[in-house]
Image (cartoon, rainbow, N blue to C red; front, side):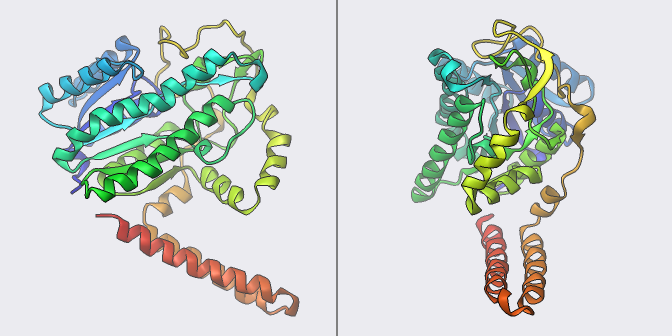
Length: 360
């Protein structure tokens, strides 16, 4: 059974910057006991100290997800300090940008090691602890878990692998009647320091594809999953829109990415391939919560606010779709469209009811 955030012990792996740090701060503000972990031990300890100064309860534990023994140590330190784990969030952040033929295969493998196998290391160790508390395992993937884009093929492959593993593992947990709640969180483009730290072969620093959202929106979605039992959580409406577009017409999305997927990921700021990056290890300074794109970043997502209440969202979407169907149906040559819209309305309503029933 889920608990309110104020009653939880929450482990966040990847909490030295960006979404992980934003989530740790918000969880602590709401009364949770927080364990921050990342390769950059100095930055996680600094963040934990800040939380304690502000009246929160937190510790920092240097942890490299690709090292199983270090993840075991993280779990041991958490139990020693707080006695249990209620939510475990894994959100590794690294990437390599460039055309596939230009990316060294060692870089592709390392991307998979961090983003995919690192999540599996965490799950192996976290799930037995979460079984004891009926806790939540929250794996942070990406909108790119469902749709690949150019210049980030290694990252997309790792995020796709994560989704495939989660889909299968979730059913295994259900089969043995596990009380662990498993959620895949899929952020849209988020204004984090990842782009400053990513390895790039493009000659310039990369940037997130617009629209861009602030990390605090990710924190809200992650903590919502920690208190509930949602299968999938999109952060920002752009990711959900891309998911729908991929289902309707992958070829159309191919063309959209052909036009926007290259220029839309490049800044004008020079950066060489040998510039400091966090692909194989921590950088000196992980950069804090936000990246360099605050002027463009959105602080609010109406889709995300509506999605937090699936029944109301589904019925509202169904009503709007049904109205569109009636209007379209007035024209004789639009009867087929009317039927499709009505079917969509019914489907949205049913999906909302199923989503609500899925929660415990």
